[in-house]
Amino acid sequence: MSKPSSGAQLIPDTSIEQQSAPAPLLVESIMTSPVFSISTDDTVREAIKKLLSKKIAGAPVIDSTRKVMSVVSEGDLLRLAATMGLDRTVFQCMIKLTKTEKLITIQRTDTFAEVYKKFLAHPVHRLIVVDDMGRLDGIVSRSNVLRVLVDANQETKSDKK
Image (tube, rainbow, N blue to C red; front, side, top):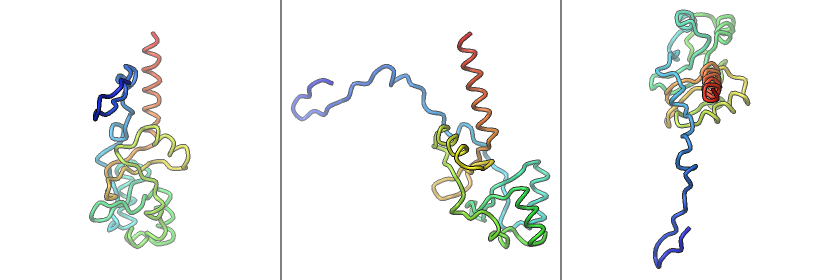
């Protein structure tokens, strides 16, 4: 750093390494969006049909404002059908689902490293991407993360050739 003249601010030196370092991989570049979701107004039967028609194992549950209320999986729907019946709405069954405050959510500006750590720390299959208001923005599944790991490893091997 150079010595400042009177009233000037110190400006830190930046090395070439810092200037050329790649930007971290962000959630927005690996997430799936738009996301298929289940409405709190759907019946258990409708929720089951939706998951089956999309050939997916789970989905976020949203209200009319797209705020994420919970997540429902095939296993949850099996239990809800047995205990609550097929004709109850998902909203009526919310007591049996993961509570909003216990959901593990991420934002599109989170880094891949943060997401990877959350998958290692929690036994979940998907992380819900929400905006600042808690509205559904996207989803990152374990397969999204695995794809990044394999692609990054493939690029590293290609670079060595």
